[in-house]
Length: 167
Image 1: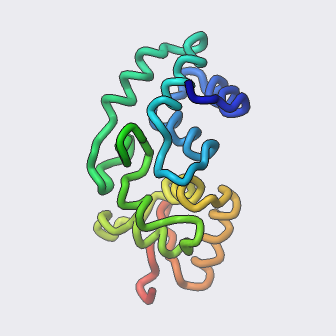
Image 2: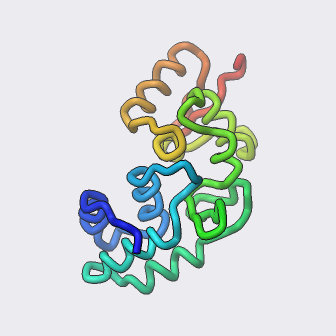
């Protein structure tokens, strides 16, 4: 059985009824960094087993399977992606291939926004992707977005971010 992190387990349990499949996988991706994309299904199952006393484990396990797609590209918010055999992620394989800790934040906005028809990238999605794929902290990403927007590199609209027209 995969080894669970007690701090992550406490955080997940503290969410109670607000813990869904996508949130669980997001927590695990941030806490269990590996060379491989995403986290193993065995790790997800290990957390589900540990959380069984505080939530409906079978419903959570089923939700992971129901949200799972093998698309290499972004499908929709709320989807989970099979990024390799037995590995799942909140983000599609394409993003794992194109982004990493060395990627600039502008690259994240470009890749995440590629299929959004100019709508911009939701800030919370950018923050989550920068954390899971780029190892950036939430505050670090928000500060960088503010700086790049002030410099005219990024444009902010409501709760979304896009490349500025001149970028």
